[in-house]
Image 1 (cartoon, rainbow, N blue to C red):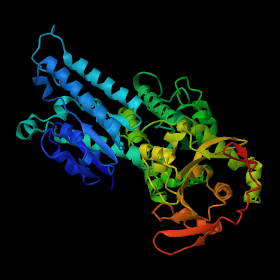
Image 2: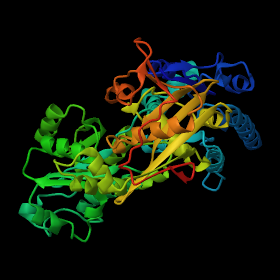
Image 3: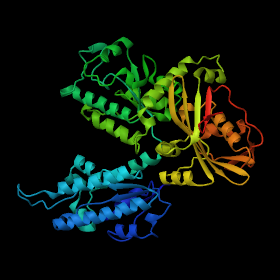
Image 4: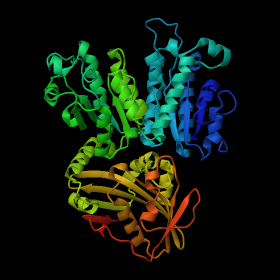
Length: 546
């Protein structure tokens, strides 16, 4: 269970109670004690055990103060939070603030609350841009969406110094949960979309391209905006695919519609046929080397939803809005609950291109071709080197999101990764892979810890998109050569619900089992050369071809 601290200047008991169903939550004792807690080096907030800190600050009391005192209070908050950001190893989420000013005003009086809100946002966003551990928790936007009268409860404030209504509490809990999911949960990878009455209104095969409902404004605007949201997702690393019962000729015509925002090139895979949609998804998963748990399937037809849910239980199938006016908000919720991440890496921005090249790779493989022949045909290249500073975000992402090919499933914060890189007895290696079809990017992380006569493999993980291409053999071959004077190379396998695909990896690579507990330990004698994978076109280690 992840450990979080919730710091606030108002009472948060009911919020904390709900959060404790999912997280180990710490809150300081005493009302508005968050500043003294931060300044106390021995407090739990400053403990290295914390995974994330949430600052939920409310402007309820500030509007009672004179304007000058409000600015002084804000400056004090900024000073304290800047100190916290500099000293914590945990992720730090800082809320935007709804500064509720005295509402008895003439039209001509100055509305300071707008300045306060903008100033606070600029501070938090600026801190986030300077410090990679800091993120904006945009509570103010949710208040704007729902309205102050719905978000707050005067009764709760006067009875217990907590300003939020039942809905407000639910929204705050939801925001914190989504932030934790983005930070630590393995997100979905691909959104599979139906076409008729999903990306446009109407049936293309019956209504024709001029008869479907799709336009930048008016009735067709809901579908236009729905497409816009998925185009925005694609730019943030969400992979898109089509699964539609249709004739290809009709769909080709639909993509020529003047208001069709998404193009055929935005999709990595298309299944436009009259086959069972669940079977289409299974075939997509095989084609793209993904698990069904990586998929979100979006279809307006409840029957198709039930069929896919029944035959592909790991696929997430959201209920489609009964009123298509809600499509844009529906898309936003899909993103937040299934795909949202903390920051965009270079690999995220190239995801669509990477998966499109994966389809090309699969297309050249025949049933008669063995694995080494296939790898040789791809002209694969592997580049293994110590982690570079610009790779840190991607390494952090892989460490916290990779589940299938992950021998120990250890999770590391950005600060912990920095410490590992700086440690004298530790090596952090990254692996990038490319072939004649394109670049797969940074796909593997290996962390080793050196002792006098032994090298321990602390972390060995790999992206699922390159599994099954003998990259693990390439990596171990290089490590055995690099550490050849160190005695033994020891690796652990700690089983989880999702890493069964690598349960027998070490024995397959020639390691000898040392014990048979829950955590299995294996060793490889480093005076024994490891077979080189000759089918790879090139293998580079620390800038030299090996």
